[in-house]
Length: 172
Length: 110
Image 1: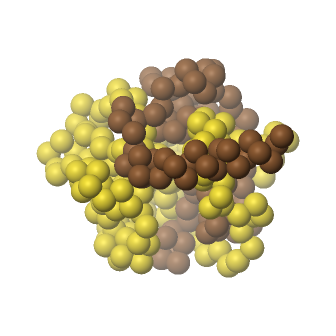
Image 2: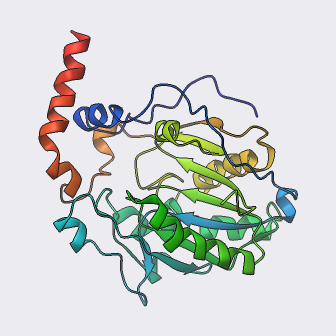
């Protein structure tokens, strides 16, 4: 991959105190352990791609993510997930997240979950297909084993059923 | 996801988080939280970002690959208004530790 010379500063938008606190939890070196790897088996213009976001997006017709319990228990995060149909727009969704300003996603879902942009790419044959179902969960998880079982496993099962080859994940 | 035979790519505003866990393909972007694809109704800008991310998905060769995207947000951090309207519960609960961490970094610099 052609790499730009200028590094991205992931702390640029954080207040200095919060950035300093978060840095105390993050290693200074890149990860050195085993990383699971599945090469993309098809060219992009043949691949079916699903979108997944941790922004706490739900359909208005569905139940929202639980913010009240997190307000009571600051280290708890809702471990459930929601399905978002590929033709959903900002008119159809609720967004609940206590760590970002959700107003922008409610104005344009594509700033977080680029359904419309991917549908355009499908039409232009840049990608093979946008999967019928996108997914959203709540990106504040501290019990990863339970989260994998309760959210990621059923999402992966649905993706298999829909013939998905790859996923684009957008953390909030 | 990769163990379930899906190829994955993550577009993130804070790639540094991935140092602790290892992520197969990371596209790092210096955009405010909650808008990694770009500005509201900026179709062209969102498409440019998405094309680069998909290119990484298709052409990435190495587990842990990290691609810095060259896009710059047009506003200064203080003008981006990405913060939640109410203080996050974890920030409220750990405000003393957060202030101490800031004092600690300031002390190291001086």
